[in-house]
Amino acid sequence: MIGVIVAVALIITGLVLVLDRANDGTVDDPAALTMKVRVGGEEIEVRPYRVCDMFARGEGACTTDDGATANVSLGPEDTAEIEVADEVSSVTWTLQRFYADESVNSADKKEPGQAKTETIAGSASVNGERTPLGVVEVSTTVIGVDDSGEEIPYGITWSIVNDEGAARD
Image (cartoon, rainbow, N blue to C red; front, top):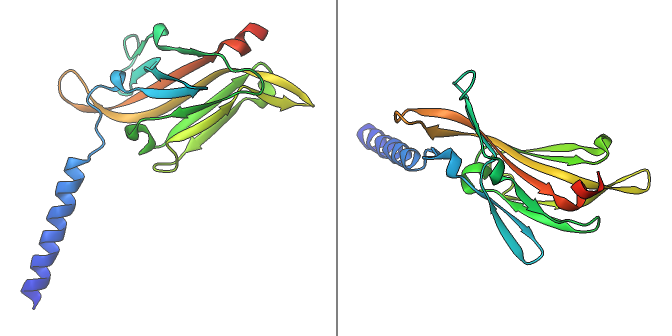
């Protein structure tokens, strides 16, 4: 009877290890990890604006791609939906909203598995007035593979600029 219990325990342990290895959450190329933003009927794929090797220091630790910033046009009453990749929704991620009136800037932290999408509004209410959304940033840390094949943490930030909000600043 003890032999059967030990055998079952070994089989379960082996399955857990195999499944864990098969889904270890490692991202091969963090710079290629995209998210989506939907405005009206349009869907835009957004590349990372900034990718940082969390172990590196000084110049070269982060790469920035200004061309990766997505531009949308959200009026005061409009909304957009942001959808992050599975690799992002399976870890902690943060969505930050920056408005023309800094008093309503906000950050929402999402726990692993809590959310894959988030709705953003084109404006927020301040003392009965609408202040336009300027920028939205999504940030997370994932385990990626560097040029030498080592697994290391990377900080990734995606950026979305609201052209309607920028025009009012």
